[in-house]
Length: 195
Image 1: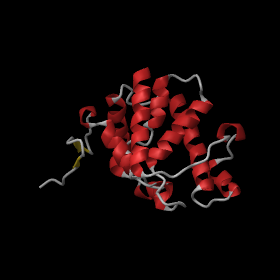
Image 2: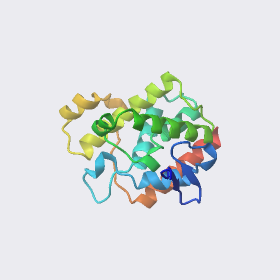
Image 3: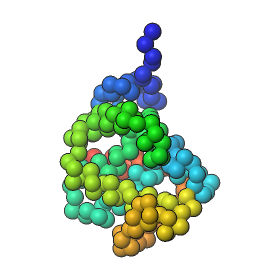
């Protein structure tokens, strides 16, 4: 008997993790899952975990500061940059490296299906991917220094020192998962309405 490779989502969809299709992806499932997935393996200060949904919103905000004239679709791509983690979880980089290429291939298949579901290209242009990665690193620096106990010097070593103008006024606040889920879903809806 073949191993089960699908997961039933709260929407009722049955997502095949090895062969995902855009039709089995719903933003409510993504928002719900990401709101409950902890960044930094949960090793952050505060009463709530810092979720991947919260991180994704921050990356979108940073991306908008870095590229204020970027098309709306690339802001949507920034919001969805870690969307596969709603079903495969968030692994810190050292674990991803230890797991090997299988994790990356699974992530790539899920990303392509998610992108197609919401009108994005299955594979983003390299320049767009690089811009989102830059916002992601700045987000990681903020998270490291404000929530995960890193000194500025340690964070600079791992993520690079951010431009102070880009991070000006960005203070991270931990919120209940339901609030973050609603914010993520609303952000997605607003971006989709602008496409």
